[in-house]
Length: 393
Image 1 (cartoon, rainbow, N blue to C red):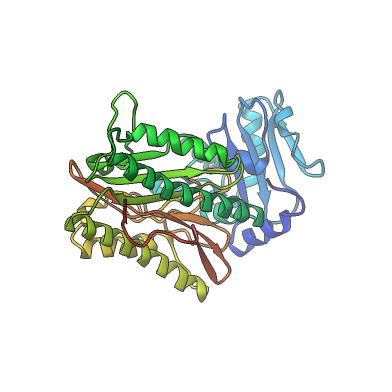
Image 2 (cartoon, one colour; image 1 turned 120 degrees about the vertical axis):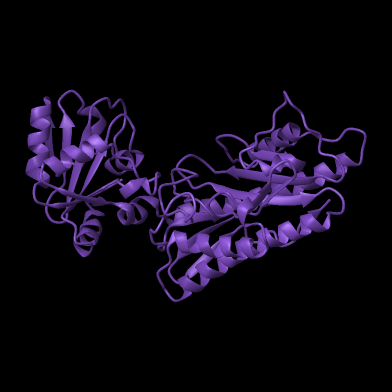
């Protein structure tokens, strides 16, 4: 949330970017970035704006009947109150006319996670005389970055998740050689119980996929269609959890073979692992010398490896997603030059997954996922001991 103490840093960033201000907009939660930065709370059913100029006092633009949700807005900052659309447009024009303004807007919808402002609102702001540009780099720096407490909470969760994943594979292997193999949905429930016992929470999932089911990246196991995990199966476990809402998730994917894997399975695993490691190496090397790195650059590096192994057509999603303090799939930079064109910089403080995969429909799917958070001159991978070889149970 924006505070008077943090305002000078933000205003300095606006000036350095050649911006006159940042215009935050929300309507009924359509822009969670704006809602969180403004600190809106409670019932909000009218349009809300906040103007953060590069110099001077921020201005809240509030509807007359909705002052309550602005209780966190600093008393020393201005409020402008409107009732009619005419008064709203007059107030906005007085703030932004002739100015270069950042908003949660992505030209051509290149980055949907950032494209939060409706076209009609953009038209209204432009009609008021403003030049609108993307707030993407501001969102990374002032919304998506982690605090030291965020890092500590994430690292603790990551180590628990890694241990649970390994133990889940061991259980699946043990049961596969007995009379009652464990089913995908049963192992899912077992993982959730382990999370609860460790004090972790998850919004849904995890995903346990056996055999050809792993070729569907968004597969969800179901008690209505139970699939036993038997000897010979390749098993994917994708699991994510957090210590509590408002702290970053840890998000990992692990792979195992129940019994000796085939030569093809080993080759696919090697391709996925090497692609993951190429992405890690690029991020770490660039961070060590403070060189600019864009999310698209890292996606390209991982994708090149998959292509060299001959599986390029089967790597059908981005290499990684932003993880910000509020959302598992966050609004910071993604590692993506496939689904979207994410050219935002990976700056110290942001975090993301690295998770290349190969999915051959009806046959086999594999993915390896770790998380990375950036410190000045350092990229830190979690969990500490991430997977290097295909686990055999």
